[in-house]
Length: 121
Image (cartoon, rainbow, N blue to C red; front, side, top):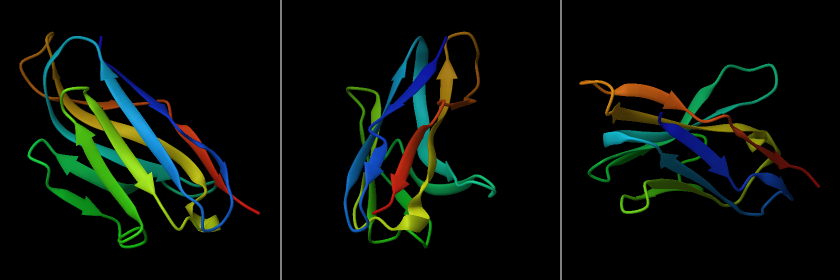
């Protein structure tokens, strides 16, 4: 079984910073794409940032210049460094991975359970 486990959420004041981590565990051949999504109360889940196996990244316009996604392939971990946080960044942040498990010959979409980020004074 492949599992994605997020950590690092919490309460932070506006203008502050947080670093989220997502570790992939289990039995798999490869990780093609990793990303972070978020879902605020009453809103749909949206893409925040994603990174390919080669390190190419893309970001939502709302976080460009403030958030940085990175990955440590040796640790099977992806990070989201969030700076200059705003109240509108408050949401549950979900880790997503396109991963080929050893039980299949194709990549499967996996999700973590989410970690809550609250930006408030």
